[in-house]
Length: 145
Image 1 (cartoon, rainbow, N blue to C red):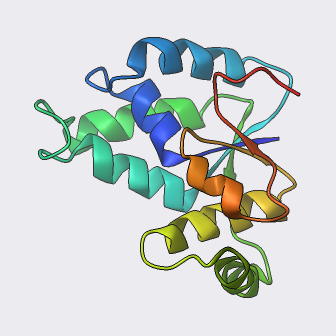
Image 2: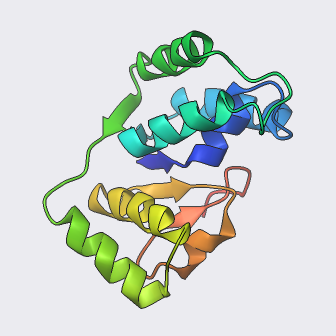
């Protein structure tokens, strides 16, 4: 299973994103691939926050536009919503302690914990995920191991 990070979805879904021309086709291939693509509620919310933010994009998406794009993705038969499981909070705290994660990195620890609980490889362009021991992660355009 692949677990997507906010930056991957933002790049794939918003045309104004610098990585859109590469991330959109990557996402299309991923959801049509053999591995299940998982997206957590936190990533969905974070994506909605970023793509509608007027300080991030000159032409931000409206909430209905963004919601339609996200909902369309979630209807794909190979896409699953990832929920946190029992023990998630403790795993987040453990990852924060082991990685020295504070501030904005706490959200990354939570994303990492969700991916780990589902046995997923987290897909992100954020190299900060390398700090979380035990997390399988890679960049979307990196070759598969």
